[in-house]
Length: 280
Image 1: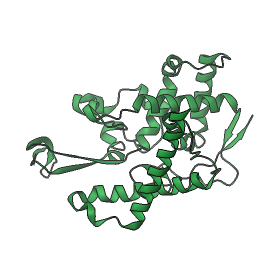
Image 2: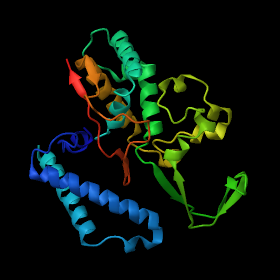
Image 3: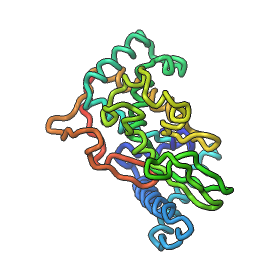
Image 4: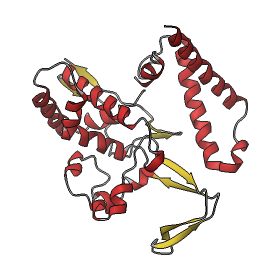
């Protein structure tokens, strides 16, 4: 959906590729992301990682994007796999969400953004999904001048930390989103209702502002946040409206949340994807 929105054409990343070009683009994009993630971690030594494979992948991504842009000048996809992955493994949550959608939409086919935002449980489901599976699980910032972090140093992690100009600080959003002192002792579980409760992190104004960062925050917050949330909400609603049965296929493996294999490049994804059985 994102590539359709940005370029006017979808690369069909959630389905089988229709052309060799689409298949090459998907493979090249994944390869380029993997290299960029490794280069980011090396910081000033990023040039140690690269080579012909990285260069070729970048050229293919640029070629495909330029082709789509040129085509549409002459005339995103927010991956909801984690949401589907969690909903089919928590049928009680799916049933509750279906009830909210049914009572809110009352048979209407059009879905205004205002209605999506009015569905509190839907918003809680999306928040809980992004808490457990943030799209960008690890990030970093570089100090443009010498500064001091108010906490994080010393044996108790409460002492200030000096950060010199040019030094980088990496932070793990994935781990922070699973902190029991922020989200409760069941932080590892998928429970959207927590967003309708008073979370432990809300007791501290700094934690309340910075303890949930699926799109980062401050002046560098993700510009596509509203689009991504609206797209995900719309897609989930349409799936539930169109299919009376959404369930795990027979024999599908069920594991505790977070135990399944995950792949991290610049973004986080579920390695084996999400198999869902749909029926009208």
